[in-house]
Image (cartoon, rainbow over all chains, first blue to last red; front, top):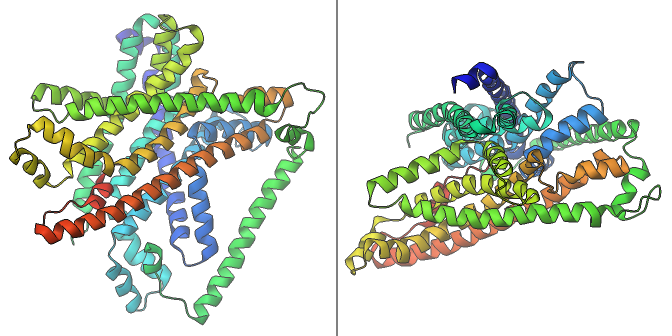
Length: 221
Length: 306
């Protein structure tokens, strides 16, 4: 097992996994909130656009989104950020992961909005808050606190889904797993154990933090 | 339902504001679409020759039919992998879900570890491991290895999810159900099989249909280990007609169409069950309280669909 760590950049690969997770999580949180606001807004067109976004990206395989971000966006349409192909793929993998998981963040937030009692919205309106004010000051804060569990599950799924980035050659852990297994089929069991253990180490704290936070932040009613 | 509680019925000024918002938003959407079309056109992706194969018109005398030769076989492979996986996942989930509720502590612990492990390892990692294991040990005929690997990965992950669904379904039943079973002289095993499981399975039906969407989407991971499923056909289509962008577009539409239909079915099933559940609650409540509340069961069931 020490041999594996000495020969292959295992920690660096897990570093890439974490990097993808970190930036895609921020991106998905921002974009997902935006789509959620669209979906609950009073303007019918905005609601339709939000619903369309969710239905399209929630039902498309992530593998397709990631591969399309390379083949379609970079190769065929020429949307490149840098000359460095490897870095460009990392950027586009983050965008792909963001776009896909934003749909799930949106749905998590909407399920959080469901936990807010009708009286809260009515009270906010009756003291004269506008739609925007009642959304930002009353509803969303409670919705986020009620959505901690599904949001946490989305974060865990995101961390695991970064492995798909290997489809466009991003140097994260499942790509390295492939290389290692090809080279050293005799070590297939240690390799899978190392990779699996890595993911347990990454996702376990997320799960624990989620249940701790959801208990702590839950709105006592 | 939730949308309407967030704002009052708009007055004349608010309606005017919403109209302006709608027009501005519409313009933004149109501008975005126009930009996308312009960019596609500029890069020559809208040429008729790239799209003709999709309506069965032969281009440059290529003697192949895009649908018959590529898309349909790919789709069949996708459906095959998904179908095998969901059946095996149900078996896996049933076995481990029930064993996790066993009275023997060791069995319970082993099942917990297995379920939690397979839930926290990415499906792709399991597929890659299975693929190389099968290939190097010649477990299957060479062209079955990829399918077997896809099925293995999907079964282990989704089976664990099903096991969890089953357990939380049983756990959220009112205690009166199992107590009643034991009181009339059933063993605990009989109570589980004849009273608790049927209710839990019904309660988790919508989540189960939703899980089908996850399985179907994840078959596309097979592309990475060279399983010739639907997504994989973009390469052959692209190299035959050099129309990768249209091919991607059509493949995405097929996936979205199937998955969206499944999601709608899941929603229907859930509404029907909720309707039925409410009726049950009322009737039971009238008799003596402690009625089952299936809607709560449905809401508590964990869905890891991302």
